[in-house]
Image (cartoon, rainbow, N blue to C red; front, side, top):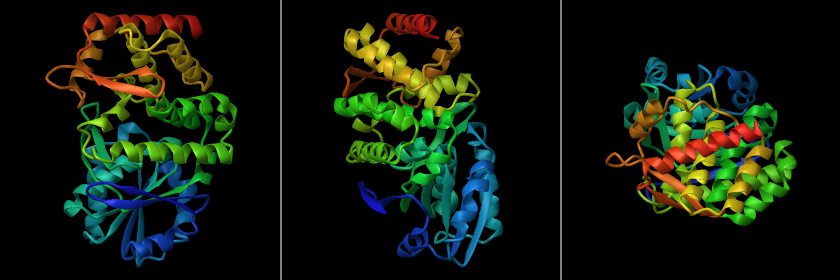
Amino acid sequence: MKEIIAGFGSKKYEIYIGNNYDSMNTYLDEHKINEKILIVSDLNVGNIYEEELLKRIKAKQVITYHMGIGESYKTIETMQQIYDVLRRNNFNRASAIIALGGGVVGDTAGFTAATFMRGMKFVQVPTTVIAAVDSSVGGKTGVNYKNVKNMVGSFYHPDFVYINTSTLRTLDKRQVVAGIAEIIKYAVLYDASFFNYLCENTTGLLNLESDKLNYAVRKCIMFKIDAVFGDEYDNGKRQLLNFGHTIGHVVESMSDYSLFHGEAVAIGMMFECILSNVCNMLRTDELEKVLNLINRFGLNRNFDFTDMNRVYELLQHDKKAERGNIKFILPDRIGNCVITSDIKEDKINKAFALLKEYWNKTI
């Protein structure tokens, strides 16, 4: 196992990276998680990995709960069902929830752990690319409300994160590609050389070659830790991580979550890169590089933005909006982005028109 230390203002914890679950019980014991444990998963992930995990956990009581599959189950109602399981089994603050799954499971289980008895022990065990490189680290938890993404939530760090990279190689291609969107996000945000690495290793990453996948996972986790350090509660530089997410969350909501999170974020990144070019920030040649990389990974997907009233309505509900101003993360070059909230509506509309034009040419 390889270990990364994530140290933030309120908490320091370990991120373990390996290719099996053999050390799980050792780490649970080290963190004094050995009494009551609830493993929260969904029907797909639970059926594949739960038994392997259960064989290794020696706590006094281990029970399981399977939530529904997908964003439509990332709700307060699902949390209430988990609360009922915890209450029936006399769980307390010393008990633990293990989130075994992707971002939906991790966000929902994490928010439940944060709020049951004002906080119980919590472990993230991500099984998707997107959860491994992004959502399992940094402490954001939450659920959707009234069809608005992550409307209700809290900051609540896990006791530790355990990434078994062998689980990532069992994902179907669409899930893999959606997760790679978040990897592209980090490259555009922070590191032109890492961006070039993605350009040179597209096939290897799509095929989940171990050396390339492990390098990308570790690289992204380090980017995430650096972004969160010093801005744990998302008031400054951590907001850069929302690159692609302003429009991405709109796309998720308008699609009734038929698109994966990463697919929607890819659309959001395309939009914000085009908007940056419209604002004379990102050079056209660099814009083309980003669009081409997104296309090469199979993330160039058309989306119907004809209902612009709905688009702007959802943008106003975005938790990043301030005093009615929509906040965008715009790259001024590959490897560096800036936060801006003073973009005129005519430029936003032009960027949407250019994105549609690009889709007409490439899809």
